[in-house]
Length: 504
Image 1 (cartoon, one colour):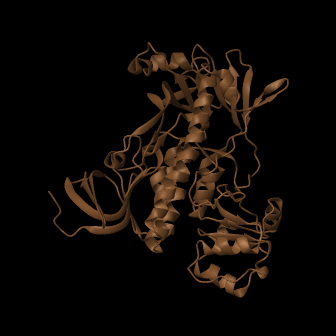
Image 2 (tube, rainbow, N blue to C red):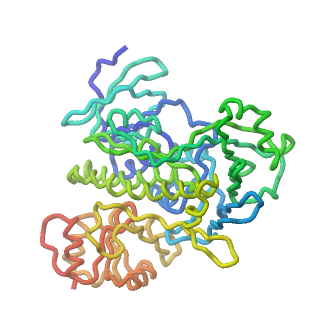
Image 3 (cartoon, rainbow, N blue to C red):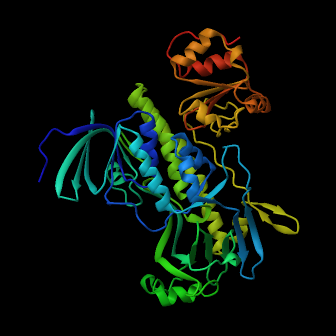
């Protein structure tokens, strides 16, 4: 039965309520954007999927006020070790247990249903955000004014439509939104079947360890991951001649786990064969339709960056949508989303493939070359976050496209909590800025953070030979200035077209 009443109007419709969709909805709520989230399922999927996120993701969660609510559900990860068939360490990817420049720890482990519950629960704080479960989107029709979104309410069979300014597909690898965009996929060449086994320990097994272990055994590559609480995961390669259904049967699963645990140690929560892919959508935007998360890219799990990439997508896209919808920025701003995010994603996926070559022993030397060789010690891996691709960064200015640090304030709190989800100008001292300059910043809703607020600001500026840096809401450096005239040009690029006097 079709609902004949006039359709509701939203600024944004998000298809999919997973971690990426829920993160994007929280950020859009923070921006004051009228948002509807449509989710096919009735409730959070109860089994583990993603198990790791990093300091940048936690900083995104901090931006919309849920980091402290998430903390009780995570454990710190000491890192990952790659061992050969004889147990010798090939690659050491240990993670520091101290805070990074992001203001958080480098590596967290979590249980995805716990994270989703916090993110989804957080949506209730935003009166302009609406969540509808059991709604199956089946059609998207664009015109110059917006998108007609048609969906079925699976609870009663009613067909409904709404209007949206933009539709974001956070609807996974089989994305409906991607099909309506008509995007092909670039295949980076990694496709392997792995048996994913999640167990709940019945008793403590400290000997299994806290490190994730990659068993680089040519006979049967395998991964061990320590989850939260009593949760443990093994991912084990499925051999070419093995049947996917047969290898997931309990007797075979316990046979494969026997080198580590027995049925006396644990209960199997889930055992299923997945094919790990490495693909990136060629087109992330078609006018008012956009993609984020697994709908735009899929990666082998060896870096733990699958969900992280989607969270970064949401952080990059949310403030740009907010600027277009709320402050009248030109819609071409949204073109910088794919140009910035795609090279970042590709670099991570390619590194995951190289590490996969170490694990499956098909390209060990090429994979080890990603780390730093040490005499009489395993290769040490330090993963540097890629830079953004070309977009809003101003030319070749120092630090453009890098993540900016988060500074400790004099009272011990974090600087993002002071500045909020906005553009921020980092400067040695705000007293050096003329009143007219400060007024221009205020009119453009650009906050100021100086050494008066956080001692580390001036030290960071001097370290990089600059007098100021303009930081975007997603915490990336938009541009820097080495002198007053460069600072004028930097601010003029995003302030209303009025004269900005010199900062001197």
